[in-house]
Length: 423
Ligand code: AMP
Ligand code: GLY
Image (cartoon, rainbow, N blue to C red):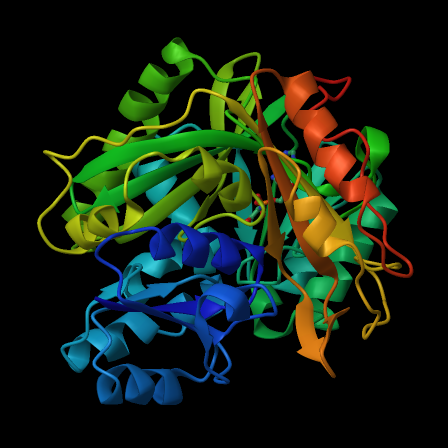
């Protein structure tokens, strides 16, 4: 099979590496890819949001399976375009991708199916939302309806902060049309957990769980990022929670989607809060998580390629998925200043020495080749994953690899996979 992976992050490098191990994969392309994917696949210089060019490339090159990494092309309907051309593609179509692309759509569906989530109100008028800031219980969580690069969520602890968030989303349009409508919802307390499942219409199979570390600095301080590290399996998950998750979240969700004529085929990754009152859905993601994927896939023993094909075509009733029971710890190395402004073009040293360490895998994110060297080209630069029999062993291996890697301004969290104080 010829496989195309769309995207250029650490998630896509992890997908390319895993798919390249499949005996069924003959050639792998990555569009646009990074310096890491270039070593094991053929990079194609088409941006992930150039839907017509991607479709043309897949058609002209006889691609047998395209796997979409990021959320934006899914929300823009890349799957519908590929399918109209008779091309096989992994990911939900535009209608199903609304689960992630519209938080209001997701909220309404959860309400209709009685799926546990934060109590929320929806606003399409900034005046009404600003008035509500005077009476709402604090803290309050304010969310832009649409996609905002993971930055469209604000937890406001006072009324001025709430008003500021409403003003910036709805009036200043800080996230463009994503802030045309907003949600204001109760603030939930607890530990978070990312659950990944392959979904094929009415059937689904869980992959492994993971816990992401979203804040930029140790001790869960600093601004939210795309994710600064992950541990898989999540240390706050157990069989009882999984059974509740299946019966009170996944099953009603798939029933609700089917009832309104939406067939979901792809990867569904609900972000959960584990509260004292049980599981609550914070959001639905319609794609693999980043950096969760860099922790989950190195633990996966099964061949991913036939699983993705089964998700699209034959269903998941008869498939088994096997995972390595060991722990994977993934630490992100970011550019100085990320998630704010940062510089790029910094040479990266020590990658080969780090990759030689036992049970270590290095995934590239914001990197590119320039004049024969690998340089930084984004905010999140590398994801370093290590497997271990215990969290301390996996952490030790990951941080030993990080010790060998250098680039100017590099920053990372030292407390990945340690339990934050509040969980
Ligand atoms: P979302 O994009 O909806 O997952 O939100 C991003 C992050 O904001 C989540 O991972 C949580 O850390 C936080 N968050 C979202 N909704 C809530 C909520 N209702 N209560 C507390 N924190 C939340
Ligand atoms: N790490 C969170 C996400 O991929 O949305």
